[in-house]
Image 1 (cartoon, rainbow, N blue to C red):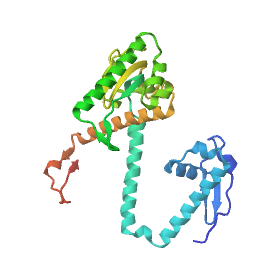
Image 2 (cartoon, rainbow, N blue to C red; image 1 turned 45 degrees about the vertical axis):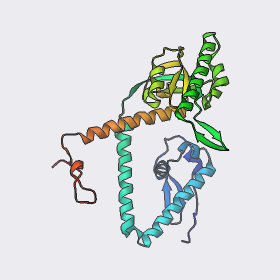
Image 3 (cartoon, rainbow, N blue to C red; image 1 turned 120 degrees about the vertical axis):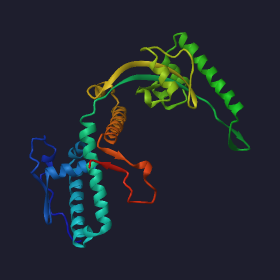
Image 4 (cartoon, one colour; image 1 turned 45 degrees about the horizontal axis):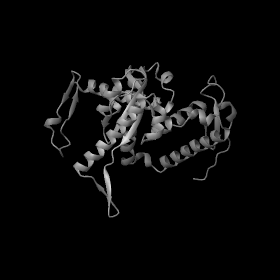
Amino acid sequence: MNRSILAVMLLPVLAIAACKSKNDVVATYDGGRITRGEFYDWMDIKRLSRDTILKSPKHQKNKLEMMALERFAVEEAVKEGFDKNREFIAFADMAAESQLMELLYNREIKEKAVFKEPAVRVRQIFIRIKDYKIEKGKRQKLSATELKRESDIAVTRAGEIIAKLGKKEKFEDLARQYSDDFSKKNGGDIGFIVAEMMPPEFSKAAFSLKEKEYTREPVVAGGGVYILQVVDRENLSAKNIDKIVKDKTQAARLKNRFYAKASREYLDALATAGDVERHLEKSIAGRPSDIIFKVGD
């Protein structure tokens, strides 16, 4: 392959408002050209951040060159007949199915999903239950009796901290001083949660609290003991989640959780539709001719 990019044109206009036409030519190279629309589609497929790239002429030029080189490689592969290769065709079919699934997901789930989930913003003080000991320089699991003793110690510590809260000491100050987890640096603030995100004991305690209330008894869940305080209560929906949850990363995680739930419900509805026949129980492993699902006549 002996080609080079001849010119990268109109880079400054890429960053100008979206009123520019998708047919504008933004780069030319030996044997072809790239339009604005093609470049935007390419960035979307690659899951690249348009905003970040369009702010930097250097990044724009780099990505346009990468796109042109990919086109060169595809042309060479076609010339060699790789597009007729059976393995490539199978891979292309799988890739096409994946893209179709993503398009369906975006249309039926992300664009149409309606959710309204109760959520609480929680501060926590986490007391870890020690579950190991060191013997002869090696880490060993505790026996059931030893683990019970360590659990009782953690519960007692939590009770002492709750007593300090009863004396009007600030929850966030006590979290910074006593908590055994990452949230201590934020005064115990772990942001908004929905019930299914946490262990049942944790969620039951958190959602039973009113705003500003804290748990009067230690909450034992998983590998530790918690003291919880509810800072805020909201019903999160597609319309308000970005306004309420200021942390963009947390908002994205919550939305992904809601979308996943909507996806499961959508697939369940498809699988139980009246024209779907299920033969999974009758199928035999290793017999590819068996029909597992049949849709319609």
